[in-house]
Image (cartoon, rainbow, N blue to C red; front, side, top):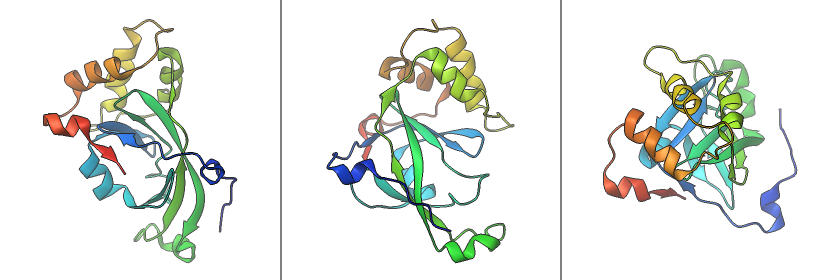
Length: 172
């Protein structure tokens, strides 16, 4: 099974680096991450422009569909094609299927738009990030743009402790 979509990266657009820390979806759960953990658990390798080889993305329960970086920019993850697609039928045992993905250009969302994106996410025990972010956003003006300042306020209250240099991390 191969998915082919037209790529914006092929039109000469430059790579837009991911600024960490970040929030990303894993299935229907929102996860907090720093650069090292994102590379360790999510990215097998960086290709070119805005393309990455993502681990465990064939399994819908673990699929990354979007992320928000420390600048407050929302980026969707579009699957271009699967690698090792022949192993799709055994992903419930071991997921060796990777997906070549393209991250869309970052865009700013208003609080109400971000709340809409968060509405389908769950907050099981131990993974309360979506619940905390929804609560934080509900206290804000719906027309306000979610930006780096708001991301930092949220992270300082609900994120894990980061060293100062981790706030400057980017990938690739």
